[in-house]
Amino acid sequence: MADPYVQISSIMPQKRNPVSIEHSRALASSSAGSAQTVIQMLHNAPYGDIVDTEDDLQPTLYKSFHDASRVMKLMHAVIRTLTFNKEHAENEAKKNLIVITEFADVLTRDHDLSFRKAHTIAAKVAQESVQTGKELYDWDVADINNMIDGTSLTEKEWNDIIDPNVFVERRSVRGGTNKEEVERMIEVRKASVEEQNDELQGIEDELEEALVQLKAASVNH
Image 1 (cartoon, rainbow, N blue to C red):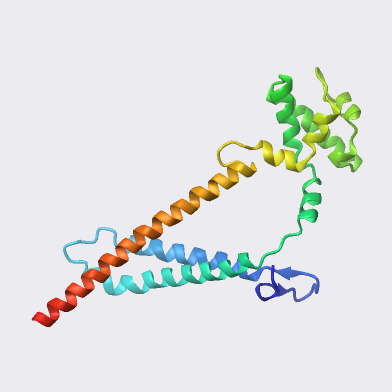
Image 2 (image 1 turned 120 degrees about the horizontal axis):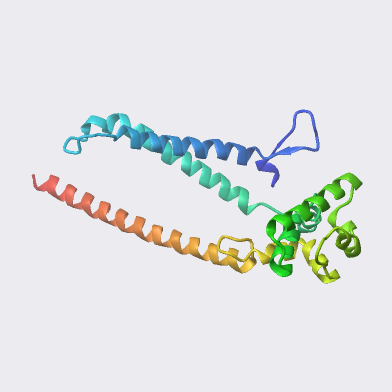
């Protein structure tokens, strides 16, 4: 994160606290809470006479909009200035048995083992890894096969299992991490935003026209 959006720890000079995101989280919750308050204030309101709520309701509604606007502006600035150390992230993804579930999935999907049995085998490998201080990439496929009952893996299968990139790409179900699926979801959300913008523009145009008519009526009277 860029320097303007972090705060140095009071006791750890190397630590950069992401205060912009932390405050955005609180502000977003405040905005949502104010919006929910508006809904509750309208509960059982007699819509033939909404004056009952307008004076008390409007400040809460405006606060919701104000906080939401602050969050959007702040997060826009944060996201635009983010940089990523992809090599470091990929190296970290190889550690701490993160992809161990793919091991169980492969045994079930490609080797006809029940998921319960595959899960037990994967748990055994995880336990051995923790006890011996090994990462998954430290194991030879021959050692892994010695812990598998009823089937065996090829070296390529094992290398794919421990590769975070393969792990990500194989999750191609709806909402998964596969690149094409992520790009699809992004396009869907972009289309949704455009549709909402068009709807908002239509409402603003209607309000503008209503204001013109109101002013004209006031002049005529």
